[in-house]
Length: 220
Image (cartoon, rainbow, N blue to C red):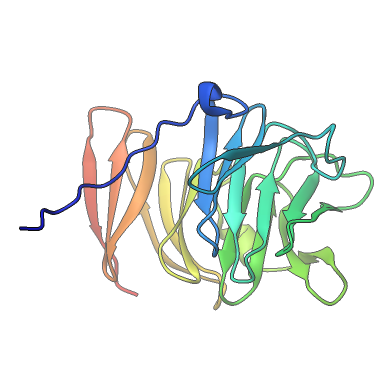
């Protein structure tokens, strides 16, 4: 009789060709390829082999320290590095580089988020920027969200297509990027390390201190 086959596990490290063992982020694209951002280069894994990408081979890659990897609805890969440039791999996997802000702004992007309403949104200390598909540029988005966020943002986590939980300065907020409104704000003890959506009405957060987990009801 047929027996159930268990899941296959792969161990990926420098021994298998990974550029570095210190991994910052991993995302899967629409073709099933894993994109792995490390402190020393970008990697793709097709289930059989690893391909590595470094700045000296791909000058439009802003840097080798890949902090965040995003795949959007058009199967483009967006990379955040500790530079004031955004790197994008188009659907044909050609590299492109885009500055964020003017020539006097050398601050680094803090977060990339993908929204249904605005597409890719890049958050910097001085505000939000969105990618214009027509001009192929990032443009400043003057939004009231700028005044709603904590002075120091520790993390931003997706809740649904346009809503995101934002935490900083002891405050947890739920922000709607479509309506540009704050849907919830709550003061929590300790230092939160993350937040996860349970369902349409609940968020689970966890704290670095002894406060443990919080299950929060959200009325949206």
